[in-house]
Structures are given as structure tokens and as C-alpha cells.
Amino acid sequence: MEESFIRINKALRPLSWLYGLGVGLRNLLFETGVLKSRAYGVPVIAVGNITVGGTGKTPHVEYLVRLLKQRMKVAVLSRGYKRKSRGFVLATSETTMRELGDEAFQMKQKFKDVTVAVDKKRTHGIDTLMSSPETSDTDVVLLDDAFQHRYVKPGVNILLVDYHRLIINDELLPAGRLREPLKAKDRADVVIVTKCPKTLSPMDFRVLTKQMDLFAYQQLYFTTIDYEPLRPFYPNDAQPTVSIDGQNVLLLSGIASPEKMRLDIEGAFSPASLTPMAFGDHHNFSKRDIRRINEAFAALPEPRLIVTTEKDAARLTGAEGLSDEARRRLYLLPIRISFMLDGDRQFDEYIKRYVLANSKNSILAKKKDRSKAGADKEKTGKPTTISFK
Image (cartoon, rainbow, N blue to C red; front, top):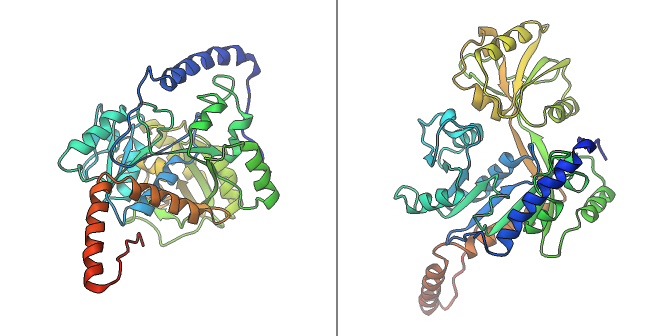
């Protein structure tokens, strides 16, 4: 097993106890019906966590988008963390990162044919999506970072757990990084342990499964990160295709776990050297930051590159002052998640089955399909079948 990144501040445990009382009271109000959770007539899948910091929500939502978008109209609804707008915003080709937040902006840039919207109040966001003429034909809503948004009752609740920050070993804020007590995992229909090393043994999986201690109704999966080829941030100015191998790399990041990313890159590639330049999570780059980037990059020996994440690239969009050399050598390192133990087959089927069975038109569609099937059978003597493939 690899190193855990959990650090507990024991001196703050009394404050964690008080924090836990507040969170426990809120959850009790939902469980007793004092605070109401709303279900919807459209399939809703929530992806989130119960910890502070990144667990890989965006690449997992992207996985769901790729899985579903070929057969149905998908809408991704995020809160738009650190955006400069308010209320409901529907992303268009002209909507800026400042209006959407970095994660939603990244999603829209990647999936231009998918509806992307932001709204801090998810119930209002779903209501707006389903009532607006341009988005009322949405077939499924994906809620990004919504495990704790209990005013919505999703049909599938997916809890992500970072392998390097297992919730079973963590504690409540502020002593630890948990935003809810461990028993909150009981609300999940699916639990995914993310960022797993590719070297996990069968025994490691068995130990993790036992440690997570899930109920029979919950499904457990394991995913790992795959790095895709570098992509130039400024395609018109970039060098020909390059690799991280053999390069002196300035690793530019404003994410929750920069140290983990550094270790991953050193394990997956062979850079000549790697110089981390880390900013806070969701950091908005200032002119002073750009000057620092130019200076740090200029100090590296040749051959050299700047490598950053897609999320950071979203926040660099529109930033001015990068040197010509930095512009030519600035590359994104895209990531995707992949399921381990062939879990993608079971997971994909589970999601497809839920979406099809709970489509907003499922009752009418089934009646229509039965009528059509009967007519086809009378004509051909054979029943018809419907396939997701």
C-alpha cells in the first residue's frame, strides 16, 4: 500500500466534536423529514465526496458523460465554485470561465454538444433546466459535487473516496478533512475508491473492500488515473508533439493534491527534472503569478516544458503576460479514469439500466413500445427488442 496523505491535528479534535454536532443535526433534520429532499421525474445522478479536497469528481463525471451522451441528451449541473456570477447560468460558446467556474468551463470546452449549467441551488438549477424550452428535453442530469446537497434526492448517489485519503482513516474538520461523519457513506448507492495505484494486488483489493465495510445494497468499484498525450495550450504557437520524458518540467498546478500529482508524473514518466509550482485549489492567476511563472520557466535549462492540468488551463484562459517562450512550451496533461478489475462492465450496465428505467418518458415509452411490439409481432410473428448498444 502506498503512503497516506492524511494528517490529523489532534489539538483541534474538540472543535471537530462541535462541528460534528452541527452536521449531525442537519442530517437528522433530513432523515426525519423536517428538511425535505426532492425527487425528480428525470434521472438524476449525483457525484461527490465527504472530504475537503479533490477526489477526482470531474474525470468521473466526464466518464458518465461519455457513457451516456451518444444515446441521450445529458445535462451537467455544477455549483460553479469560485465563479463571479450568481444564480443559474447556462453555458454557451461565449460564456467565460469567470461566469462558470473552472470545472464547468472545462466541461463545456470538452463536450460542446452537452448541456452544462451552474447553480448553487441545485433544486432551482434542475427546475430551470426542465422548464426552459432549450433544455426541457434533457434525458439525464449529472450533479457534479453534490453528495452533500441533500435538498435533491438523486436516483443514483455516487461517493468518491481518494485511495490516498481513505475516509475510514480520516476525522471531521478541522482536525481532519471529513465534511461529514463516516456513516454518511451509508447514503451512497455506489462507492468508488479513486486514484488507486495500478500495482494493487488481489490481497490489497480484498483488504480495501473489508475496510470500506459497505452494506449489501452498495456497490464498490476501484478506479485509477490514465494520462493522455500532452496537448498544447496554444496550438498555433506550439512546438511539434513532445513528451515529458527527458524534459526539465515546470509543473504548474492549482489543485487540491499537487504533491500526489508530482509523484504520479515522476512514476509515469521520466523527466530530466521536475520543478513544482503549486498554488491553492481553484487559484485565479494574477499578473504577479504570471510573472513568477515566466521567471521560474526561464530559469530551467533546456530542453524545458511547462505542464499543467486541464482545470488550471481553464483558469489560465485569458491570462495575459506569458512570455513567447512560455506560450510555445505550455502543455496540458489530460487525464481519464479507468475501472480496475473489469468493473466498468458492471458499472456501465448499472448506470444505463437506471437511466432507461427512470426516463421521464419511461411509462409512455413502455406503453408505446408494447403497442409497437404487438403490431410488429402481428406483421412478422416476431417480438421486437430495444437495445442500448
